[in-house]
Image 1 (tube, rainbow, N blue to C red):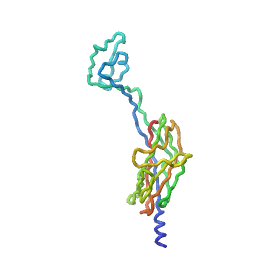
Image 2 (cartoon, one colour):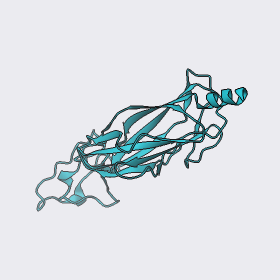
Image 3 (cartoon, one colour):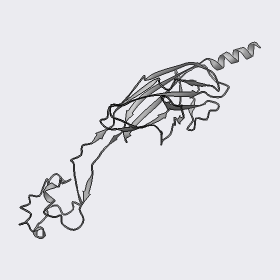
Image 4 (cartoon, one colour):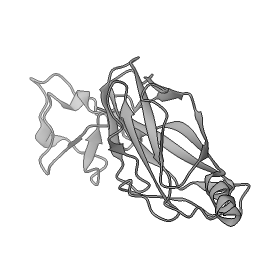
Length: 224
């Protein structure tokens, strides 16, 4: 009986920490126009921005007097031009709180933050979609057993699961370790906020050490 009691205490003496970070994904909106073998027309030459900066523009007279057939182009190997009128856009999100302590946890159990514990804010200037991913949970200090994050939230010996959900709903979005990651929020408006939460699924028995575990949950935004 004493030996069983000691084993039970050992199994529940595990403290789990989750660190949450919000990241951004940079994407460029640089539409390009390909010029085929034929020469461009006199009507559109003056609107072109040339990719080779040594040839910034072609000075064309009035459309009714120019003869494009007689023009000599200095760069014969310039296959395309780029329109730079659209500036690069960067998604920008922030998240609070950035740390959650699940406290002491036992084997083969679930622990929830509540679906209104965290708040993500969109600061991008445009609507975004947000995906969620995670990492394994490692010992703090290092040296203990690593808890591997399952890509389908199925737990096992030293294997954990995380699911996420939005305020007012259930935690039914699996937090994966490997890409592609699942979408947590769709079309969050500029300056919009969304509360969300996590459910943590612990490994099956036995728990092999009693060290604190720490892992990271990452939110990534792209334009919707």
